Figure (cartoon, rainbow, N blue to C red):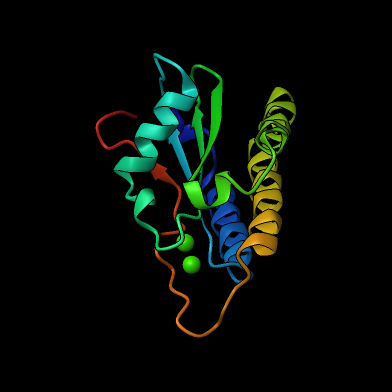
Length: 149
Ligand code: CA
Ligand code: CA
């Protein structure tokens, strides 16, 4: 499915809202990136996108990217160093499984929203929100590739 048709406008808004809510509780930053094709390994691509989106520049290295290649049915979760070293490897697999299970049933929005929620809870434990001086370092909008659909 083309990346631009993966979520309806309303669904996309729901996801942005879920990210907004999650980031009220943590200094961490969550982003969703959708693209059409992913030729290689999804995790490698996610690492590349993470960098392109400037997600490795957050102060506490606590950004989490959920990457989905909509046509190729690939997904990966990539986290900044600050959070990655704090959680068990199995945690990221759990997030991926949430996506996979829902995507099987074409529940795209629901899968992403649940994944955001779970990542948000983990970020909240590790990087609690400090109202003073906490910035929204990265946009909460779903991002797409400019050059592809
Ligand atoms: Ca923040
Ligand atoms: Ca943000």
